[in-house]
Image (tube, rainbow, N blue to C red; front, side, top):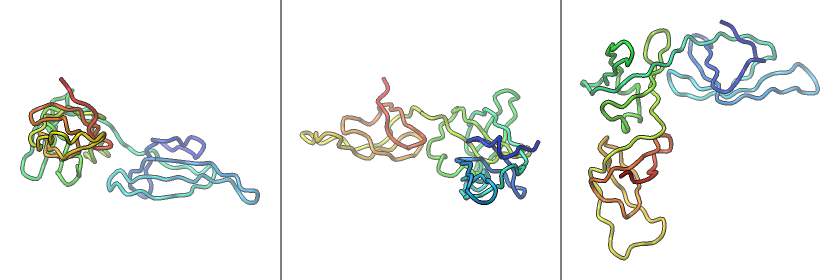
Length: 187
């Protein structure tokens, strides 16, 4: 289905030159001279690369054949990560390099959104927050209580992040997967 520039909105997925893109930002511009146009910042869903692109007002682009499916992460199998479709129970391997840095926050049985383009998995979208146990961190030094002081800690998924000094090994914390930061301790 084709959409024209008047229907542009943030998050719109479209296909340009056989590649899937998503609009991150757009702005309609009406110069004093010449025709109106739309300035956009778009991201390639396959490569993750961001580009600026300008469209003439009224220009049509094709909507991308993109689908989100909720899937559960099962396990790592060599260079592939195996996910299970929660509705059909189909298991799909996705190459680890395709997932990128998000692999650092994948826990077994974690539900993620997998983005499919033309029936092939492109990438995953982690939930905004995950809860993970601290597997390794140094004890806080007594008397070292400067406000906002942090120390590095490794969580069960393998990611290392900064946590407050009062956090101990074995505790469970909530992590923001978008900013990759400690949020709070979970009881």
